[in-house]
Image 1 (cartoon, helix red, strand yellow):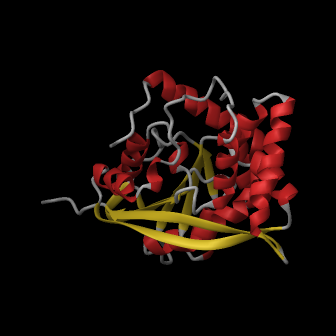
Image 2 (cartoon, rainbow, N blue to C red; image 1 turned 90 degrees about the vertical axis):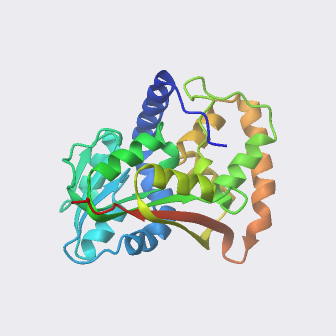
Length: 283
């Protein structure tokens, strides 16, 4: 069953929550989580058939790794993000690329501007994903392509999975500024992902599954990195009283220890890349 759509007020609430959260965590996101999300760069760029000269838009660009990788492969890349701090960071890290502050439902580009649109792990943060993806499709030239990466089920995506399962052990109260109806893992479901792409008018749609692993040195690095990068998770934990936070931390360490190896914590990572093509206009 499709998820309930957020009301206008809930969507605005989530949008403000995401903007403020990513502004606050931009630096720590770049340090810890940007290398994790970089695992999807090659699959995304391959899914849109990137070649030299491709005019590409990176939506929810964060610190700009995806747009920068596209530019290194010869693309004319542009990046947008909701968070002013993320845009500042991306401009500082990649001064040769055009990064702009923009909301995904209201992109500041004309119809049929880009050959390709990509998005690395922004989808579950969008308050109204159908409207967001339709707006992205608007900016694509006929025959152009879109590719979106999102996380697989938390049981197979263990960075967020460990945090979510640990939090679920406790009767936590969530921050009041987080809409309770929001389901950030809706598009971990392949059928939901395909429905989203088709609903935006794309054809030749497909969802490809990817799996790998990611090593972090120790539990403390994972704990601090997660709290300093994952806006929803970090807010939920910080919203608890000190005693509950300590219990969550102890339970997290117990769960994470099963991934201990000689190199640190070897964490399974799984994600999906949904892609499609904008049809040619009929004459």
